[in-house]
Length: 284
Image (cartoon, rainbow, N blue to C red; front, side, top):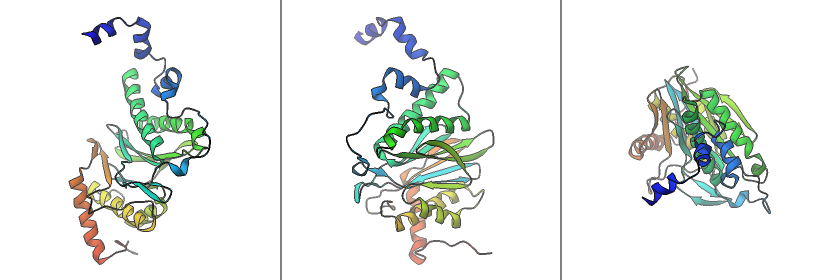
């Protein structure tokens, strides 16, 4: 009752402020009316603190038949210390897209939450969803807004993947600290173990593979990254901590449950028992 009367007594301009913001961008609206809540606020830090804050590490993405797969390891590090073993780095942003984060974990988590609201806000104000290119460019604008903080060590670089209904295919976009986006063909990886993950995917990726085979290729790539990069965590069988794996097709976004990921991991580890370096690509 009290809550109802409080809403009813609000001035009309307050209601109109939130129903019509003057822009389809929630990020711009937040920056004007509540800049203290915006993750890209331009505050000066006393000293660079990047090494003291937990960092998310390796994300991989690869297109598959009718969609795209994204997977991320679960380790966060602060310098040479493992600060968290089960952090999540892959997030649903709408029904047909997701993003993975590498870099400063706290800034990346805020960016992922704000970007999800950004897409929802656009859909509600405009009555339609952004195109895949529009989603990629909107994220680039938000990353560019974080540049002052990135220059002080709070760098976050995402990887964006989406199912594009106009092309009936999956698409992958990468970024740098100044924005982007840069569309990547077939597969890509970001984070400290990305060089090893991309090398693995060069061997294992097959165009138009099934989502299941692509998931397995991405898990092998994360395993290879963890094998050579101390900041990337492999599957933790003892603690039952598995990589986060998401598949996006014309049916929408789907995060694989842990028991399903565990089956893929067990299949991969069984093969690695006899071939520790993993599967090899045929030369002919």
